[in-house]
Image 1 (cartoon, rainbow, N blue to C red):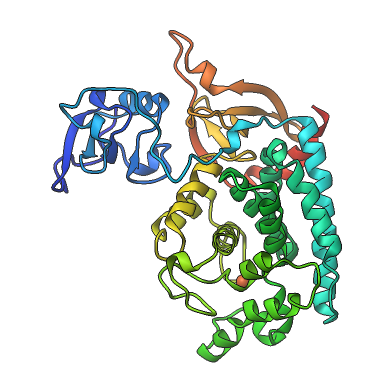
Image 2: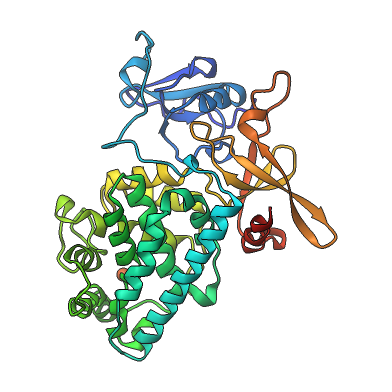
Length: 418
Ligand SMILES: [Fe+2]
């Protein structure tokens, strides 16, 4: 056990230090004896949701500081334990882990992804030529994906993690479309709404066609005047797409409002809170997530975990609180396609998160060969953790795509053959 933290510093009112063996589901953990970065927990300050988290803390930490006010009433000291339900939002969002990543779903998803990619390229070429676009085909391609979304989500999320700097514009539109559909689907929205938010995601920045190219492609910081001009892209996109007979008012509203923010500091209308349409908020949130996790001219890509922490800190101000919580639950701590190193020293790729066991996903081991790494055996870390007398295998670290020359897209192809 490690004692990285001073137990007695900064224990606030409403907080209590307890022995790690006393930790249980429903406790809100404010601090652990182990430094946060050495734990698998995504966020500093979290509610314990399942037994795997309880076991991890009992095994690796000496003590925990819990927040009594934020802990569920039945988990506070002295309360009688009873069956607890998960902390919740409006309704529990569906999580990625529900459907397995199979060769068949990867095959369907790759076809869908390539269709969407061709559509994004077509739209961008039209942007360049300042031509009007025909959105009928766009709608058709996105609807096809929405119809089979639930079964193919893990594979589609894997594909959104494959990034090429020189294809940022197209890939960003595709990723925003897919992640927006994933989040809407997780929130239980109807297939029609899922498709609508997917179309809005693909077209959200179309208005940049009318932004001065020197400002659009500027690598340095924008002047206040340039920024004001750039901010007009949501209105420009709305104005162009309003002319299209197939565009629904809901999609148009999402495009117009994707930079509105709950605290009223967004644009173009400076709407606040509930005045912002949910679809606009979904597109705005996943737009930010994909931008944070991509390499940009002015900024290095941040990891999935860092992006989640950034969004978490901005919940309620920059992004809708409920949506941020739902997005974090939906994507999970490790998403399919995450490259990880294990406590055994092996490298592996996450193929499926296991619901309620977020510390122990299902992984494919990467076997070192003279020609690089090949996909090896599948390990279900949640099953392995239950084997008596055997030290559980855990994720030690999350590695960026490209680590040791390992590229996710190579393994997407291998998965098709498995
Ligand atoms: Fe935008």
